[in-house]
Amino acid sequence: MKLELTAQQSADQQAFREFSDTSIAPFADEWDRDERFPREVIERMARQGYLGAVVPQASGGSGSDMISFGLLHEEIGRGCSSARSLLTVHSMATFALHRWGSQQLKRRYLAELIDGSLLGAFGLSEPNVGSDARSIETTAHMEGDHYRLNGCKKWVTFGQLADLFLVFAQHEGKSIALLLERTTPGLTVVPISGMLGTRAAMLAELHLENCAVPVANRIGGPGFGLAAIATSALDIGRYSVACGSVGLAQACLEASVRYSSERHQFGVPLKEHQLIRQLISQMLTNIKAARLLCMQAGYLKDSGHPNTVMETWIAKYFASTTAMKAALDAVQIHGANGCSAAYPVQRYMRDAKIAEIIEGSTQLQEVTIADYAYEQQLAHHQPAGANHD
Amino acid sequence: MSPDTIKPQFREFLGKVIRNHDLKDDDDIFAQGFVNSLFAMQLVMFTENTFALAVEDEDLTLDNFRTINAMTALVLRKKA
Image (tube, rainbow over the protein chains, first blue to last red):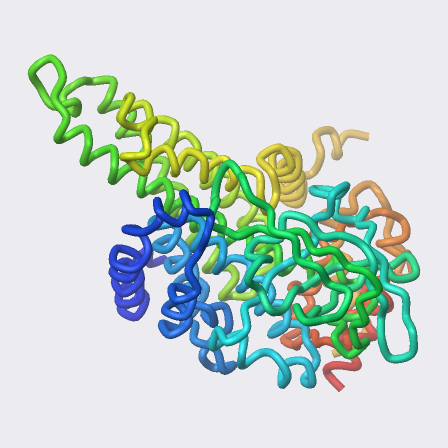
């Protein structure tokens, strides 16, 4: 076992960090305030190859491996959760096409998703459907070589800007996955504003009224739309949110260390007060543990090991709850300043709450991860009393 | 590679989540509610990893993964 980054991964990490420090973090409060994300920043990320990082270079993408992909999402997440969420949903759509799309579909869309000339997004949630994804109400009726889509998709991250949506619908009682172009007649994109966190993620509702989508735009067979395509895309999304949460918690730590070193109370810097030190110690320890969980999940993805699915659930659970605690503590350390717009920690706190809800809520994780414990435990041990007839 | 070498590997993998049930080779694991969508993805990854093959777009139908017999037939077809 070797617990260290390769030379390539270290170089990637350094480059991601510099990009985040110069092109993302300094502007994140302004984007949050304006609820807008500038297109030129998306273009800059595209030029860096960040939009194609989920596809390995060997397959025509710009990514090194899933560890580097995770490091990218951590560093961008350290600067701005909205920027990270753009990478999240774009990567989910791009991954699904690369992994499960037909050759014809890949020829049509993949290169442009990789180079960022097309922006991808993910449409699963609906007004009545969140965690219970099997209950989606959007319908797809086949008419010749097209499906007719009717329904509504909600909370579509970067829906306001995306060019291509990976959407899910019910067709004859089975779920299907389709790539829907923004210019499809019958598709209306309605912006959602006033969100608590990741406010620059330009959320939208998609209203689908008799949208004609070619059958050739379906990814995977009927019935496997949710089981394999949504699940594997959500696995990438969950990994992105987990790594982004590590970055968010790291931002909380860096802000708290800086502030508690500079701010004096009772004649000494805040950092000399023991209860402040306790918060900093907990923050650092939890961040390091969360980062290791993310790296393990990434390593298993690179190995194609099926356990990566549950290890990613665990990483996302721990990392997002760590980010929430770190953000609450960071605001506490900053006192009244932390509650003001003059410091970014209030943004971190709002963004951390979003991370606890998206891509599998904390509560869903708390019931699901236990299944894994029973599987792992029972697979290796006979039940008590098994040898006593 | 033959059905006799493939089936036990699927049976062992499925046995991790389908407990207290003697799984038959033609039991429909989805229809009988043994597994959820999260497990379906793990099953696809297991198939690829264990038998060194790539499950592609056209293979991704429920019918290829419903039963141990169907999974075995898929592996034999992909390895032919």
